[in-house]
Amino acid sequence: MIAADNQSKPGMASISLLTATCIVVANMIGTGVFTSLGFQVPGLPSGFVIVVLWSVGGLCALCGALAYAELASALPRSGGEYHFLSQIYHPAVGFLAGWISVTVGFAAPVALAAMAFARYAGGIFPHLPMTAVSVGLVVVLTLMHLGSLRQSSIFQDTATLLKIVLIAVLIVAGFVLAKPQPLTFLPLRGDGALITGDAFAVSLVYVMYAYSGWNACVYILGEMRDPRRDAPIALVVGTLFVTVLYVALNAMFLYVAPMGELAGKIDVGHVAAVRIFGDAGGRIMSGLIALGLVSAASAMTWIGPRVAMTMGEDCRALRFLARRCAQGTPRVAMLVQSGIVILLLLTASFDDILTYIQFSLTLMSFLVVLGVIILRVRRPELPRPCRMWGYPLTPLFFLGITSWMLWHILMDKTAESLLGLLTMGAGLLVYFLSPNHPAPLSEKKVKVRFYP
Image 1: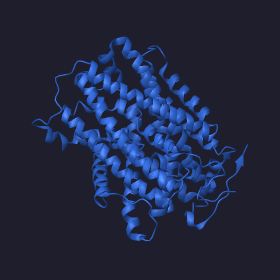
Image 2 (image 1 turned 180 degrees about the vertical axis):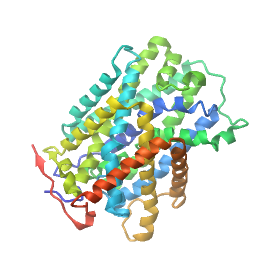
Image 3 (image 1 turned 90 degrees about the horizontal axis):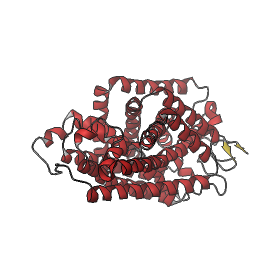
Image 4 (image 1 turned 120 degrees about the horizontal axis):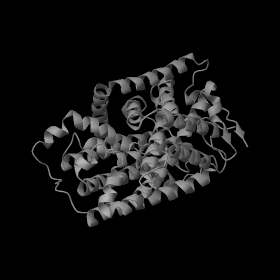
């Protein structure tokens, strides 16, 4: 028997600070940074504006990470937004966030990473069946994570560190070996209008998708050795590190390749690699980028089922998702998520999936950061080992940027946004039709069955 605070069996809470930071970094450095620039340069043809765009995204992500760090230290339980929103607002709001996570919140990013993996792998083997490669990656990662927590930790740490080395080599090689483009990163006339225009707001959607994952370790707090101390460090350090890499990497892409050549391309990393190393070297580098995307898909394959597991602990109708094997792995939840990933790979396109999930995920993050302010007012006595730096300016900056994004997403991508809202409505319907609503954590303890 385990309590609903998600304390695990002896020996299960073994995720170190290094692994927690690697999970944050791995979730952030994935599909977005290697695919987003091609969608941005048509509307923002300025080196300075692109650098500002990615810097604003990094600052916004850092403000969000600081908010999540405070909540993680005050409410240390696995589940992420599901747990936080249940405690701050109402279990129905938390269930809504968990529903999004369980249905598409993690499955869709895994699908995107698998699609990008297949696209970059095609840089070496042009005749590979893309869909089969994507599905094959999902199957392999699922089988790998069905094992022990230690096995998953070692794989994740190694894959993430290799990906960081790859990106560092690519950045240095780009600025040292490639022929520079006639482009300046200094502000020019008209850049101010670009920054305040619709194209900047819409491009910020792609950037914030690239930065998504800064909240990754809050989904596995119950398996961390010291969540109150380690989670805030992992969130802030991981986000700062990735911000520096992202700004440098996108500046390098613009430095080595013409904007016209990057426009509309998903595999912008391959375009840059060919400019740096030539056709043969570009193919090799595309293969290495594909391997780097494995880390992102792996991290989301790992942490996504933990949200479903936490929901299963609270909701009788979803109790089957809480079942764990002897090593503590939520195998049923993992198989369900992988099934959804494969369904998305077989039925949807890259751009449709990205836009569909971004509105819902951004709205949930908005509610969580707003919850920091609400919790400070409503429960000032709550112990907060880590308090948000720069309060209240930091949460207000995050809320302002995300409000701007949500409005422009709704106006520019109305159909996809409404589909996201429809998914959320289905979650609320499931909640209120459930014979046993999930109760707040303070009101109950739950039993979770372990099976061999």
